[in-house]
Image (cartoon, rainbow, N blue to C red; front, side, top):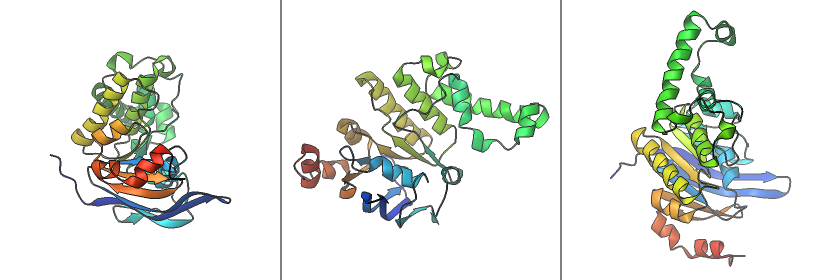
Length: 259
């Protein structure tokens, strides 16, 4: 049984509104070291808005988000990434004309120490650095079992493999906290099984803490340590998968009888 550690991410009283529309209202939960923490809820519940607050895309009007004791205050996505937070997106934002290897290489950007001048010259230190970064990317390609496609333009790959490349690009940042926005969306059963395995392996072998949005309740119940449930921007449940599954408010929300 894996060991769950102390709180690494603390979300306190987050409220977010766009004009008069409330996306999130007074949301609080925490994430512990080495756990898989799921955020679930019906469509429009505020799940992606919550991830956007965590990784700096949105700035909430109220509340605070703290990672390892440091509070995100007006931070850009790049600053959050520099603190060790990586993210995949619900709608793939890959470079379709570029190869699998080059797409994953873009995730090494934060690790590059040489400036654009050296990289453009591609000599000496810059060449050595790129070689080191490529080695790291090749290890990720091996881990995700996509060696056969490493030089293939991503746009030619089946959807399930494109999602795997998206995960690879996030892993290339070597995050301590990985945010996954519906990583199994649009997949068939076999593709979902593969992605579940990779998520669990990332959590287990790399020790990466994971926050996951997912609609497939079977997946959530199988791979999550704890689950927080949102509905219409409010938190209606929080706890172990079995507790959440038995929560009357959660059952009502999913059956459409809460409103």
